[in-house]
Length: 449
Image (cartoon, rainbow, N blue to C red; front, side):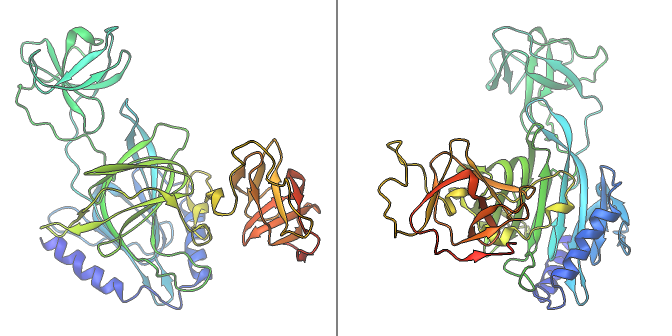
């Protein structure tokens, strides 16, 4: 309760600092540049300071406050009980953590990154002790195997596991015959030794009624709150956290404010009890679940979960996730993704600015009058949508064949070729399209940017 009271006090203090006029783009950019410059050699299991103010409180009897003063200062994430990041006069907090996280169905640990900035408070539960042995085994029975609640063939089947499914064994039933295993960090039970590959010969023993904690690594579970709608000036991002996994590895599993997130790629999150928790998938895919439902998120979409206060003061889901919808690209395009360890992008849901191809397979330009508003459609190879008129600029979406859009201007890009401008930071090169209507009267931007 003391920790929750302290968090509440810190949060009340932070709420008065959400819109510091001094924390504008240059100050924020300096914080993110510090992460890039001073945290380049950051190791997994460490929190690295980008810019003060970042205040972790360590675990242990003394609850010592660890001061992070200079960019690049670091601390072990396993020692952090809670973490507050704030914006104050002439400073703007930012810090990045790298940590291993279990992913996929084989419980292989891969690195993940969390970068918090602006006004954020995170609470980290005490990690459960790891089993002394995590032995790799595999389902060998051609018909698969049953994972059971108890070590006998009459016990309830928790899950059916396919042949070659990789598992982690942690103990053997006294007398043998059954193994206690993890299939995911939360899916655990008993399996017959006869249907899996042999584990280590010398394993600890556990009784049938043993209560085994979920297998979570530090920072795979956390609670947080953040500022919302608190960008200090035009061009600056709002407070929140960026969470990233390698998009090409198995999705990583997280529990955040009591909701479950399976992530392969990059997400941006914000949370307040009054506004709920927002999960934006910038790149890759995510699966967000809470009691009552699940939302499958693709690049360019977000979902929200209503939150309520639990008896202990923690935020917990009050409803299932909302249906995915397109996020506000122009606001999220300011996020400091350059300070993340894996290259990524802020994706655009193309149907914010483009229309689907006609259902009958015809051309969207068919029958378009010469004086109609200018309209173009993508050629058979598609048309890349970029953040600026530059063939080296990030691709934020791709228009498929015969999807169409109405440009607001034309411009000459850095490659000296003509480009369509659809909106601020949204461009398509003309030679990837065919057009119709009155395009000659569109404004011509001689030095497009």
